[in-house]
Each structure stands twice: as structure tokens, then as C-alpha cells.
Length: 240
Image (cartoon, rainbow, N blue to C red):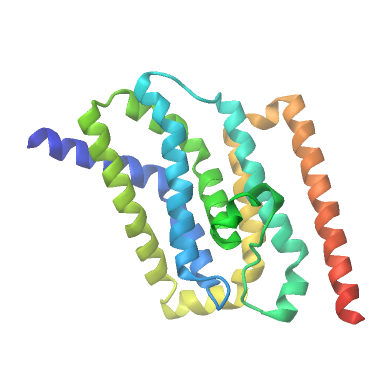
């Protein structure tokens, strides 16, 4: 019994320590809920992204490491690209629906969106990217687990995901928080996502590798050109 309590507390402590920043991201997401972007998209996306993190971390249970830390930093490109898209299309989206979050279908998720909504895929991508720097912690934690303790910790993690979603949802309904996010959240999200991506790249020393810096620059530049062109075409179409 004592050992079970210790394992549960270890799982709770590990989850809180590695996911405290997710509260703010979830809070922003819940502030953008409307007729298109729904609560279920956020909850399902959060679970999908977190489960993906656990699957990538599970090799630690067998004593291995799936990806070097510097490669994990490349996950930071996901929130950067989503943030750029939100930023470059904010004027267009604002004219159609002021509080609608712009997470739509991307080619990167085209195979998934046959079964899962683009909004859910977008949330999952941000969740996975934001937790990418935690994989090393999970790998180390799982490597020291028995099969029984691993099952307990995974159960604790998956339970706390729903707790995190509920806490963020309730916080989004606090009057001053809701009013502020309703007014500025749509414009704040792009910068939060981009800053999150840069933080992930920096924490994993990915920007210190010349070839990765070049790849990141090319991807960001191409994304900027594509989103800018799509925005111009949409604007011209609306004018016609």
C-alpha cells in the first residue's frame, strides 16, 4: 500500500512539474470556443497529443531513447507554423468570426483529418510540441519503473489530463479572465504559439546546430510565403 501511494505521488509530481505551462495554453484554447472550435476538440486533442508523448517515451521502459534531444527541438516548428498561420490570417478570420480560432486542415495532418477534425489535430500538435522537451524526463522515469508501477503512473497521467482540461475550462469563465481573453486572446495566441516554439527549439539546443537552423529558416520562410499568398487570394476573392 505504501509503495502504491509513493508511485501515485511520483506520477502526480512528475505530471505537474512537466505540464504546468499547459494550463495557460489550454486556457487560451478554451477562450476561443465557438460554433466551429468546440470544447471536445480541445479535450480530445489534448489527450491525443499527450498519448503520443507517452508512446514516444515508452522506449525508456526498455532502457532506450527514441530520439536525441536536439531532434526533439524540431517539434518546436509545429507551434511556430500554427502561430504564423493564425497571425497572417487574423484579419481575414476576424472579419468572418472575431473569436474563432484558426486551426484548420494542414497537409501535415491530412491523413488524420479523414477521421479526426482539423481543430483536434491542431490542438494535438501543439500539445505534442509543447511536451516534447519533457520526453527525456518521462523516459528516465519509465526506465526506473516496474510493469505495475508503469501502469499506475500512466493511469495517473491520463486522469490528470482531464483535470488539467477542467481547471483551464473553469478558469476561462472567471469574469476578468474571460473578458480579457475574449478581447485579446485571438491576437495573443499567434505570439504565444511562436514564443512556445522558439522556447522548445532553444531548450533542446536545436538552434545551435547549423543544419537545423537552415532547415528551420527555410520552413518558416516557405510557411510565411504560403500563408501570405493564401491570405491575399482569399482577400481578393472576398472583394470580387
